Length: 447
Image (tube, rainbow, N blue to C red):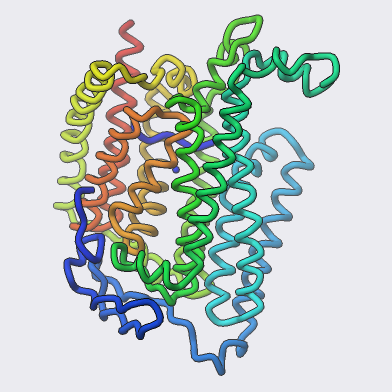
């Protein structure tokens, strides 16, 4: 299975994503940037949102009020969830992965017309970037733990437990290496805020270097995409989430002694948050009304031929993916490289390897991931870059072998979206996941 809930190309020509010379060449930094064409390679106005002239930048406070209202409602709901506890708390915990991103998008759209909102956008961007770096560092540290129970004892009484009993011998060098890489990635991400850098980037992906929303998105997506691979790199190719599941305890592995598996209800929680967050990131309700937002995402009613073709194509794709996985696995083993721990991954997903789980994964991953990646990102950052984002969302639970398979499948879904629409690619993605999970379910039932 290539798409799971998170805890998210060939050589391309300018512009990326199939433009093939439709955009005028970008002049050197400091020169005049010619206007974008009337339509982008996806048949949508590009860019749809333009900053107004300077004399009207402060004319409206409505975007700021809408953004503030959304943030206030979200923060209130999360606070109530943690206060009540139980499932509401778990639901709001999932929301913490999406609400901050929606607020950043809303602030960026408001910043097109209001300088105060633009300032708050930079502040919120800095806070989110710090949060992402802390998550990356946490996954790295967890991957160096020798015994999870000893780790908890050390947290409670640091003086009573020698640190050498808590972490691996090379933990210090691993963490130092991770800090160096995180610093480098942070600098690369911040460089995207500089116009000359964005002008260079716009030569290969279809962004507008003068669009404030594009600038903020490019900075944050760079950090998310590259940063998600760092734990996998510094931990010797082992995905941190599976290492955590395999972390030794006196009772066996952590995956055996603690119930940290993904539950079916967790998929529903994630889906409930993903959809509105994607809508906000597409400009609703600040920059676009609901109909314009759906058009921006290209989430339209498919034709009967597209539906039938998507269902048939997804079954063929699932069969091809099975052969692809076998080929990649054999290649990795022949090169002496480590492969993804399938047993640990199955323990993580064991509650979802059922017919109900197959339906849930098909709907939530198919619709949610396609709206966010192929609908939202691909038209603006191109096929390769959006697929790298898609692949990076799986880097915490997959090794390099499985990530290569994810990348290839993502390319196919991206091409389908380019040729048809997001709805069709969502059907392909959803049925594809359903077939894979049902195959795993039947295989486990027959054992």
